[in-house]
Amino acid sequence: MLVADRPMTTTEAEKLAAHLLNTDDERIRDKRGPAGAIPVDDGTWLFLGYAAA
Image 1 (cartoon, helix red, strand yellow):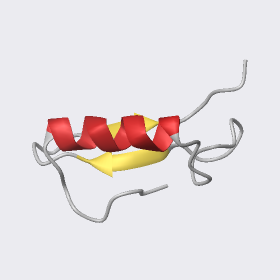
Image 2: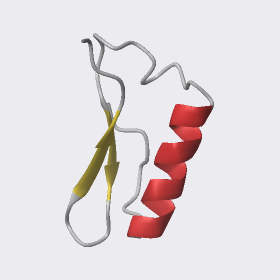
Image 3: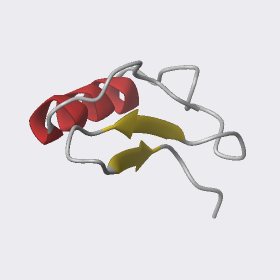
């Protein structure tokens, strides 16, 4: 699931990812649901979320 609508610097993407995880954001909360995706301005992606054990 796309959680940012514009590419960010690596630092911005990491800060957003940490915020989403620390606040238990409902978009990425479900460990069997979609992962979060943040576009990074160098053409890569940062993926985040929880995984089922």
